[in-house]
Image (cartoon, rainbow, N blue to C red; front, side):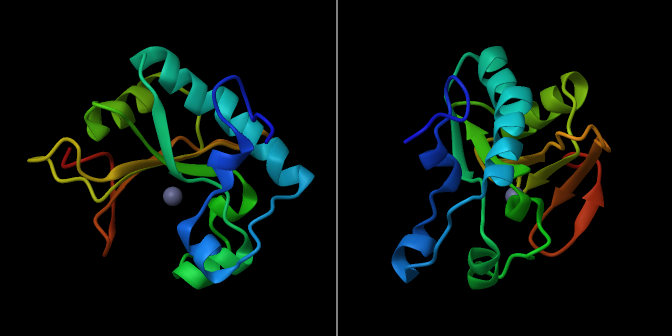
Length: 153
Ligand SMILES: [Zn+2]
């Protein structure tokens, strides 16, 4: 399997339990791979370098078919190879999201399912657009609605 960047592989950026179980094709195109490389270089590698810990990607690329199977929008940036959901082992997800907000170029940063009483709860969703049209939008999502900003700020 190829590498997306120094520390991230195509395998970890495309794997999905649902795709495996249901036999759904989750193969990215060359354009999707180019987008994922930009995301890895500009966001995931930078996070890994800063926190000096492994970054675990729970969901990267999702084909349109996979999006439909899991009830995620086919217009999601995951379907374009521009977004990943991840955590940094041993780090508070809010702290990771705040560091990205303050230090990196990104399109959309969402702190998802985070409960401030449990720093390990939830995960960070971050997208990056290689065309440079990055909005630096910060949101929080609790499974029902989106709120502006990260956490309860
Ligand atoms: Zn996501």
